[in-house]
Amino acid sequence: MSLDKSLKTKGSLVRHRNVLTRAERVNILRDEDRWHEGDAVFGLPKVAHRKAKVGGKVKTAKTEAAAQPAAAAEKPK
Image (cartoon, rainbow, N blue to C red; front, side, top):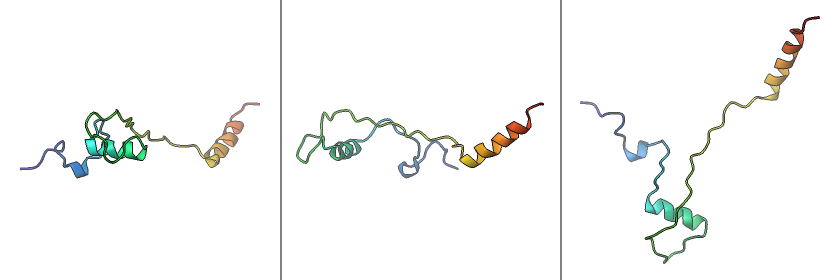
């Protein structure tokens, strides 16, 4: 019997998670100097955790230069 594809282990989970664990929130707050050793781990402030936006295809100068002569050749006289 095979394992359903939606039942993945934590190590193979690659999608963005909206809810962070307490340890992840403490690490982010520590990096931002908003939490110090000895502070309470209960009632932590909210931490902004945004999904990284993946950029689309970027036009290079080479493709733009190739497109300009083709457009000039199409002009009727």
